[in-house]
Picture 1 (cartoon, rainbow, N blue to C red):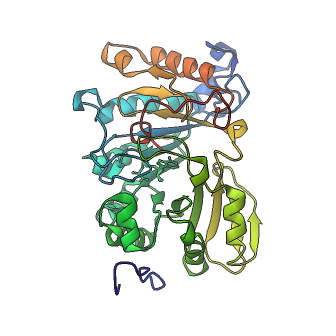
Picture 2 (cartoon, rainbow, N blue to C red):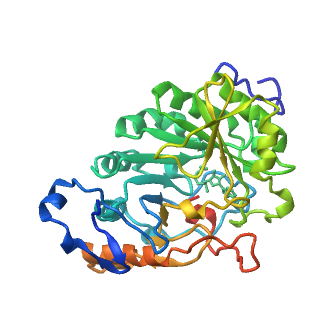
Length: 369
Ligand code: SAM
């Protein structure tokens, strides 16, 4: 790299537990042999008949970056160690929830790779039979060190957050001079065969909007999925202003300067991203618009915070505690009960863009973005 503001040289590089009436599992209607054989697909439905099969787990609220739109420079008040769920506790929650129908797990934070023992934890999670999809979201700083071990531990795919391809700007956004570490992490993830590798870019007007096209160009020669995410009103970072938000239609029209966008049909593990490929490209584009086109109708997720609260929506402060239950001798049945309470309370949609909207109390890092 010649100087700080130059772009980095990257070109080389069945009705199982069917919930009919909330709070009631119609478990008894199902033949025991079917449960033993797990022949029927378990299903968790919320009051809006959405199938909930995805749990995002924030394993820590600690982060080694201070992205301006997420956190103040001095950080945020951290959750005391003793309040953070142990890996054993998380594994117990996952095992119970997995039997009920959770089959997709994403580990996030804070920064999940800063938590000690994360590789072993991934390995234990990957052995839970019902978990069919296990992924992790990282800022990539420690990825070079961990990619190989994570892959061996059973992690298949990874999401890496990166908002600039310019060293100097990366520093301005994150307040850490670590662009090269992240890029080395991406290269290592490619080398060890984590697949797919998704790069998440939060596009903000006046911050990095001039790099929308450069990110897309990466897909021409690298098998990366570049995902553009609308800036959301959350976190304790610098104030969210609608004026700074680039909507997905605005981003999409910029991408059309790079090449023809060919839609890709979604598959069953796709989240809310609308998928495209630039004609002739090796990689893909994903567009995620939680603000401009809320995808709440298809929301399939719950979140688990580092201190053991289930959250029903990123933008709702409604939390259902499971830690107290675990630490006070609660049974697996009690845990299932809390899962059902969470399902029952899952809101139909977020209220961003309405006058009812209130920024949530917790920072993104303590929820699991
Ligand atoms: N440390 C990990 C990482 O960087 O991917 C996981 C946690 S981080 C909170 C998860 C994602 O949330 C990052 O991609 C980050 O850019 C995104 N994020 C944080 N605040 C956001 C906001 N206000 N709007 C949109 N995305 C945000």
